[in-house]
Length: 334
Image (cartoon, rainbow, N blue to C red; front, side, top):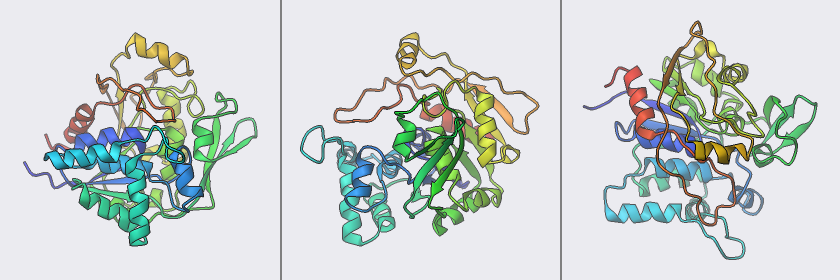
């Protein structure tokens, strides 16, 4: 069955990767709107040495939507994922990021480089940066302190139990015309999952994003994170996630909240406790303006740490098929 509905996925990172990977099995009418606020790992080199916006989240979304129907494309996909584990200056970087940097230099535009990379990978859909303006995330905390930079927020050297009371960008950034049009013309907008402030809210604080979402008649879905995160959402319950989301995206516009109800394996919980993380407890109330869908959304696939990867990563993920089929059901497409 051909699906003509247009899907927008707002986020970045591994959460968006899971959602896109599932959706592409149903349709090619998908657009990922991706944060450009990354500042850790290879992003720092891209920003500081090459004067470019970070491309790691772009790369992940491109890979999620890539068509691996042939052996050559599968090899190309593996090549884009390849991360250098040695070598002065390139250790920790992925080939895909370096490819996008080179393509940008050749074409003279990151937007053109992203589009061309999508063609090369034969992606089912479209990947768009939320903005092409350089800026840093600025987090203000409940003790009056301020932290600048996505990586400093996500991997704190300060007290990660502190609560973020406000997230902004400096300077102010603006949504691209392409991202604005795609969002307004969509039939389903999916927000999350991902680093709550550094991935999800990082998109929503870009000027024009909220207006574009408001101007869309799309069904709007928020996918709750599986775990809390030290430095961003320490000891958050589902209710607190929604309360914080409401500051940047009024929940009166939400139609659905998806939340996992499958138990997290004890061995995984033990590892998460070492980094002060716990499962997100569902304390949402049924009288909310949105419909709550509590279901098994957990992937059983083991997550292996990639050689050469210098950043912390999640140990569990949402299951792409479970998420995408749930989206299709609420859209009455299956």
